[in-house]
Length: 115
Length: 115
Image (tube, rainbow over all chains, first blue to last red; front, side, top):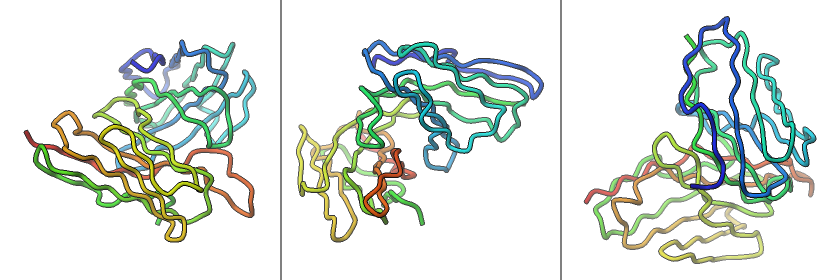
């Protein structure tokens, strides 16, 4: 266990559904991240929050909407997704965001399938 | 080709043998990290090596960094079946002395250790 939990672990949704992914870290960290991992592609950074402020939005489509109510919780709200959005969504945290110099701690991921 | 390319893409060895994975990158970096991912799970940080370091050890892991060749290697000695996983290098890319502000991951090396 890395101290980062994600729920649900698996999610199947239709293209018209709205769902949310949840991430919680128990490490006392101040930065949290969402990544997308698709088959045969490198891990893609989606969003970064540092001290609850969004510092990075990596040109992610608006059908993905992040929310960070406090330093321990991070959500990814999903609506009107496309089949190509099917992937493993990973949450990570670090002591703080240092532009890539930080060590990140990952959750187990949510396996998303969009039908 | 991409920043943080691992080589080989897949490696299959017997228990007890050593496993060597390589990572090449294109831009300047401040540090390079290696992560491990068991199938369908989150990533686990293994080791971080800074640009002014040439070699680092952690247990059965040995990492080298050659900034002149823009490459790094991860050596796992006396491998075990439990080492079976994907291994990723991640860099904080720099341009003109300025960080891109995020970790960039490679596509990984899939290591299989047969008992």
